[in-house]
Amino acid sequence: MSSETNRSLLSDYGLSSLPGDWDCPVIGDHLKADRGISVGVMYPGGNSPGGIPLIKAGDIRNNWINPRPDFSISTEKHQEYIRTELEGGELLISLVGNAGQTAVVPKEMSGWNAARAVAVLRLQDKVDPIYLQYCLQSPSIQLLMKSWCNTTVQETLNLKEIKKVPFPLPKKAEQIAIAHILGTLDEKIELNRKTNETLEGIAKALFKSWFVD
Image (cartoon, rainbow, N blue to C red; front, top):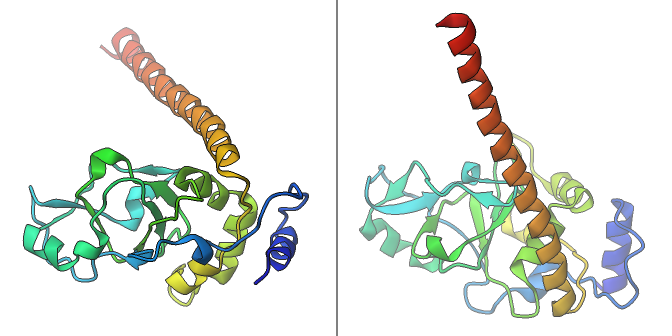
């Protein structure tokens, strides 16, 4: 589809008034030729404590990946699915359940793998993965992806749909600036959440000390 057609589609879902000099491609236009998009491990076998951590769909939420997955695969099984071995910088998208959740793989998760309910995207240099992550979490694009989900049993996206998802694309420097601002806000929100949890824990301990013990 053309950039104007993609703009019109996004406008139908509430994302309008994009700057005139921004492009509006689909994800499939900017995937690397080698291993551009793949699903993860199809048949993981049993849990292998001490093995290769496996990121499941439920481990991805709020632009964040659970740093302590509860499932690992054997080294042998990992080698069978070396195509989706993570290096850091890939964009992950959950395909099943709460479909459309996204997160960028941090470097410290290099060598891990992903489950079959997770799409692994490797993007061309023109697109900043953190910027695209935030685009895909916008209400308009979330609504679009939800409308494309197969909901016969549970919400399910497939790779064909992901490739067709349009997104606004400014120049790389603008992408990085936007991602930095949104990332900084996310960090402040997470810090406030942790602070509130700490204060709540202190309050509960004081209440127990004063009125129970």
